[in-house]
Length: 344
Image (cartoon, rainbow, N blue to C red; front, top):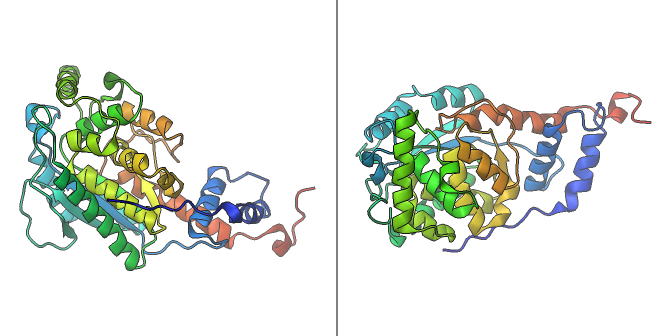
């Protein structure tokens, strides 16, 4: 599978910066919003970017290792939370409604048959991954199918006029999978990138570290992103990586949530480094591995709210900041148009 992402032409950068600098404000006074406005202008290759049909995709999948005790919650919570999403009762539903983002839940590999439901996209590869403590989490065919389906989902959204997409996830045990992927695809040691996930106590955290060390003893530490995904990934992570790559291929703005979503981006970035130009990093998670990921990608998120819920909640919460960056660029008066004396 080959992905082709073209870096935005930076020929427009000077004109965008000039437009930003001549707004009725001191130079740089809008801080990170100015950087964000310039980035979105470059992505869309225009001095007047527009955000159309913003959409949140929440990818759900089960992990075979969950039953070994890597999470504080039982595996059944995955499908129960999908039901909560579909009923409109989860945090991501609240925040997406508040910020005007459409929301779709993608069944990438949940161990449950939901049938046809409004708001649910059935892209199931299999009812969960294998237990990576004993064998690879998935085979190459399953991995590639998941990534291809994710890419197609992004292309379909683009075809419907969407040009900004947020990424979220649900899957009991997926912070463990994200820790293993981060260990493989960055220079960080395993213990540094393992956190409490859904709320493990000290004994649970110790057990999680022991179990993940066992997994690495079996599967090694592959630096190849596709092999790391095969060994330790989840179908929701693989499908998310494919969707990110497909969204960037389509010239969309990608809003990246926390630790698990960024683990999918690590895979996508290792395959196509140009994807980074299309990514807006929402927040810094409380999971310790997220700081490692952000440092590896040489980026800073927009906010730090001490979130660790997942679901795409951070991505939905910062969407108004993305809107603000575009709106000031398009609507704020310049010194000339307002008749205000500019910089000396």
